[in-house]
Length: 499
Image 1 (cartoon, rainbow, N blue to C red):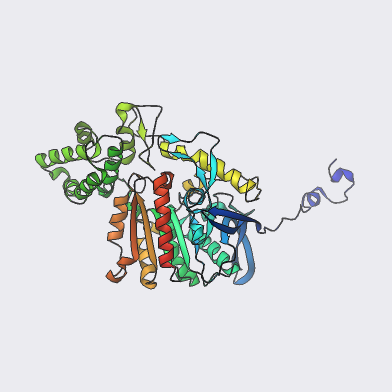
Image 2: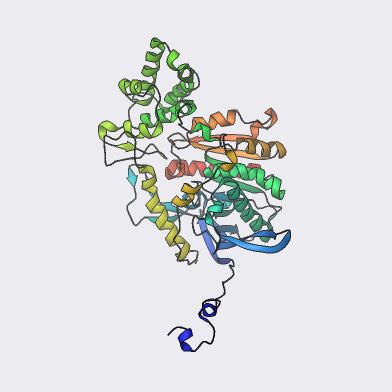
C-alpha cells in the first residue's frame, strides 16, 4: 500500500512533499596500515594511509557566508616513514596526467614501495600478473602522497555537485592544490622539504601548481620532478599550418626506427645526434619555405628523412615532407603488418586494417593497462585494507572528453611561463626533467625546445637538470631504466632538500 492508502489525512500533494531520508554528510574515509620493507640489510618501517578526503569550498550567497560546503571526495594514498623527524623528512606529492588519469602509474610503476610486475616490450608478463617489493622506492628518501584528481581513481564529486566543474585547467590546479594544503597542514609538514612529481599532463599540472601554491597558499617548494614533460602544447599540435611538431618529433622517430632495425650499422647516440642537428636546422628551414623550396633542396630533405626514419622516399614525397605521428605509427612497420606504440615506440601490435592510414590503437598502452589495473585493485584491498565498490577509474574517458582550456582561448596552452614565474620567485626551486628516447607522446626534443626558451635568468639555469633514458613515456617499464631513474630521482631529492 502507499502512504495515502494507509490513512494519511493530508492531500496527495502534501503526501508527495514528505521529505525523504536525510543526506549523509560526506566524511573522510581513511584507512591506516603498518608495513615493513626489507632492502638489503635495512628494514624500512612505514605507515600507509589511503582513502578519500572531503574537499570543501567557502560559499558566499549574496555576500553572506554559508559555510564550508562539501564539493568533492579525493582519493589519495600516503606513505610516511615511521619515527622520522617531520622537519627533516621530505614529502613528495605525485600524480599522473591524461587529463583524466589516476596516479596508478607513478604509484605502482616507479615511486611507491610496491610495484607491478608487467614485463616489457617483447617480454610481456601474462595474466594474472604480480606485485613485488620495490627496493628502489623513493620512500627511502621522501614520504609520498599519491593523488587521484576528481573523476579518476576513487575520486568523485559529492552528491549534487557536477564533476565536470573539475575537468579543466584552473579548477584542477585549485582542487589538487587544496589536497596538498590540507595534507600538509593536517600532518604538520609545513616545515618539511616539499616536492611535486608529475608525469605527462601531470607535468603541466605540476608546473602550474608550483606557481599556484606559491601565490595562493604561500607554499614554496624545494623541487619539481617532470617525467615525460609537456609544458607547451603547441610543440605537440599537428594542426595544419603549425610545422613545429614535425621537426620536434623527428629525433624520436629516428630512435624508434633504429630500435626496429631500420637504421642498421649505427649506434643510437649517433643517430639521435644526427636527427637533432637536422631537426634544429635545415629541416625546419625547408618546411618554412613551403612552395618556394627549390626542387634540389626538396630532394635532399626527402633523402635525409628517409635515412633518419626508415620511411620510403616515395611516402615522404607524398606526405609533403611532413610526418604526422599517428601516420608514422602505422607506416613504419607496414611491411610487417604491425603498428608501433605512441607512448613507447618499442612496442608493436596490430590494427584490424593493416592498410590503414593512421594507427587506431596504441599497443604500448594496451600492454600495461591490464597489469596495473589488476595490481591496484588487489593491492588497495588486500594490503592497504581500503574497501570501496566504486570502480577505480584508471583513465577517465569522460574527464578527458570534457577537459576545458577556456583560460587559453585563442592562444597556445602553456605553463612554461608558470614554471619560470615560480623559479624567479623562489630561486631555490630545483627542476628535474626525465625524458625517454622512444616516447612519441611527449618527445624529448620538444621538451628541450621548451626548456631552451624558459624565461629564467642565467643564474637559475643550473637549477634545471635533464636525464634521458632508452625507454618510452612510462619509461620505468624498462627495468634498467627504472633502476637508474630511481637513483636519479633519489639524488635529486637529497640535493634539493637543503638538509
